[in-house]
Length: 69
Figure (spheres, rainbow, N blue to C red):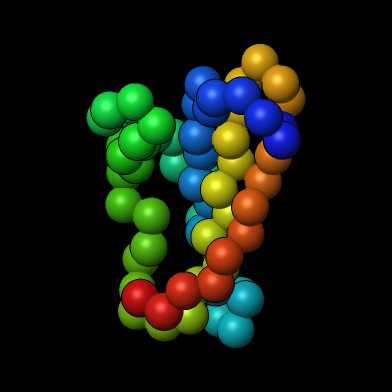
């Protein structure tokens, strides 16, 4: 999805160093362009990879970012 607005956003967290991967978590639209997770995304402190999947009229795109929780 290189243009357009996201209709839905899903989050999937993985902690490769520990072999953990959690099922995707849905979000709800809080404001235009702002989504909030419906469940906890992270189960413990450490380095996680968060995959953010945006879906809309122009397709789907997944962005993966690393973060320290």
